[in-house]
Length: 227
Figure (cartoon, rainbow, N blue to C red):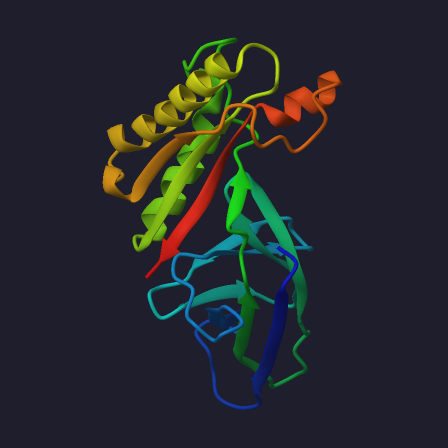
């Protein structure tokens, strides 16, 4: 997630009274670099004072508002499936006597990746049975699809080069279908999800080392389209 931009404007009111003078309203607009609203983006604000994380989710207009306590410095992050991308720091300054906080106007622009790997989805050896410890990341993927109702994805299965071409193609297809079925069984519309196995045909590392083969045995999510 390299293409990002960050703009914010702090407006401090010097008179009047707020319900809680230590809380700041963050009015946030999330879009891509074509200024198109990004729906369902989870933006995290991590406090440097307390370590507590606050979360806002953009609506169909790419907007949300959230209240944060100040003074504090926050690390802003963009949450994806199985990852959090550091974005930018934002500081809420200390108030002077007789000052009250107004509003942060925050603009976030970024183009998310079209392909990402499910690094924590595991299968029994040589099988398409999803192991229980995969649930956390699969639940994140389910939430991702729920928050973005207009996207379609492909679940892409890949293997290393061990075994025959035919068996690897079959195994990768069955694993991709297993992930698709897991999502459909939990309420995601099957018409939004394609499952395709690529076997050993698209390696991302050398098959000559154990580490490389492990990287090649993977399940990817590919964004097909966004309305």
